[in-house]
Image 1 (cartoon, one colour):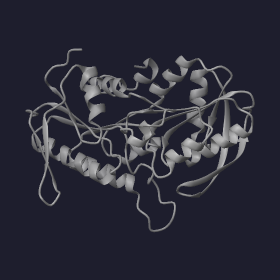
Image 2 (cartoon, rainbow, N blue to C red):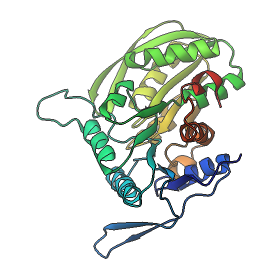
Image 3 (cartoon, rainbow, N blue to C red):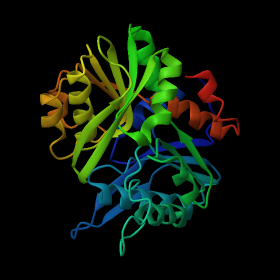
Image 4 (cartoon, rainbow, N blue to C red):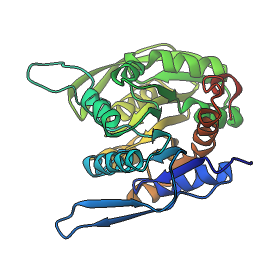
Length: 318
């Protein structure tokens, strides 16, 4: 695929493998940059390619360590802005702090909006993200946002498996629309789990709306963090007589007790994308499969660079 020298893609340290795969899809090298530290730990980034007047993209997931990767992204953006890049796009496959998107009690921040402001102030002209947890987060940015979804990658994988007697289960009420889209794409029935949340990492699925007995179940969500929701839902549908349980998620955070919970849950396969590098412990779990989002991101970057439609990806696939 031929793209002229006006396109430059740089990689942060959070997910260099994904950035490299995106560049391979586009047929261009990863942009040259050198990251070093001062003795006190402060980061210094030096861009080694000429970026004056060029269309520049920085690929950086703000995953764990979140603050470290976020500050690195901000430094990259500022560096490109001061080097006179024509347009700068922050490619954030996984957007940390996305779940802090409202004041659900007194005296708490809306950190998602704060981070959106920081990215724009640092020099980004636009943002390209995948499953920002809630679509309304696009409105937190005062710059254009192209919002992709892991459904493009996950739906193709599960469709190719040709799952028989399929019921798509929404693991919580807030995920009903996503589950309904998967059911429509894959030709399955729809069921919904009602859960109660007791704390940030403890939930209980206590009611199921729909029929799963003797059927194969697919549960899809945007993120698996501590895995409390998906494991509780898996226990419930298994107790109602389902056969296989498949789980798909865009972002495999796998924080805290997640891997232990998934190991104990009656789940046959867990599929995530590579928006976040898989932890070493997670690589040892044979039931976890990783799909690449590189082609989807590469196609979106190509279209942004050429001022073409990105939304048409959702109808055409990649």
